[in-house]
Amino acid sequence: MKYEDFIHMSVPGDGACFFHSLAQILILEKNEPRQKTKEKRNKLTRSLRKQCVDWLENNLDYTIAQLGLTIREEIEEAVRHCERTDCKNYKDVNQYLKYMRKNKSYAGQIEIYAMSYSLGRSIRVFIKNKDKFQSSGLGFMIGLDPDIMDDIHIYHNIGESVEENQHHFEPLYPKVKAQNETGRNKRKNTRKKTRKKTRKKTRKTRKKTRKKERKKKKITRLQKPRGFK
Image 1 (cartoon, rainbow, N blue to C red):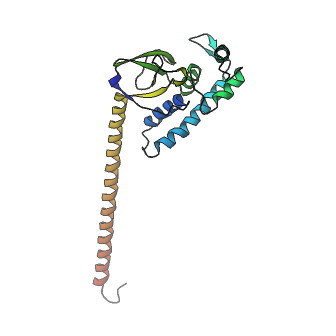
Image 2 (image 1 turned 135 degrees about the vertical axis):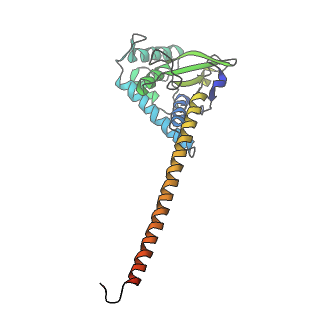
Image 3 (image 1 turned 90 degrees about the vertical axis):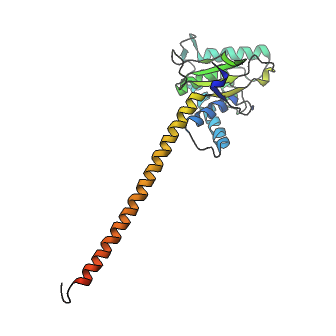
């Protein structure tokens, strides 16, 4: 896919970049006002992390069909990797889940599985190769075929000349999707303006009608003979 076909956004590199990226994309999809976007994203980021770890905790024995491994087995492999590399972050599955609840804990493939299943959407992760995006090896497909309007697209700097603790996710938003939503918003705003004008015109017409009726009643009363009931 071409780099120019996406809006490439930045998010904080505070250990929650994966969840920041998801939050930014979900906020854009809702077409919410830009006011206080940062506060909304940070709040949603924390909510998504909780949603992710809750899903993992409740689905430890769920088998990932494409792998034939359970969530528990995937986490146990992450624990063994931690032991081999002396990361000291966790020593068993429960400690892993507890660690992942911390706001600055870096998410990886396991959390991608969780959020993909939890949201019911494919999460596709890309690296940049010159002027194109190509698969990073991370990500998870819910369906068989890519869907640019529904899939969640994320950039990762894996493979670039960075230290291990500098790996970073960033949100990608298809321009065709943004254009489609912009057109839909314009139509929505047009309908809103039309309804507003119609209501205003209706109120004005009703006001004129009531004024004419009052005037007519007044004239009728003045024209009645004295003593007429």
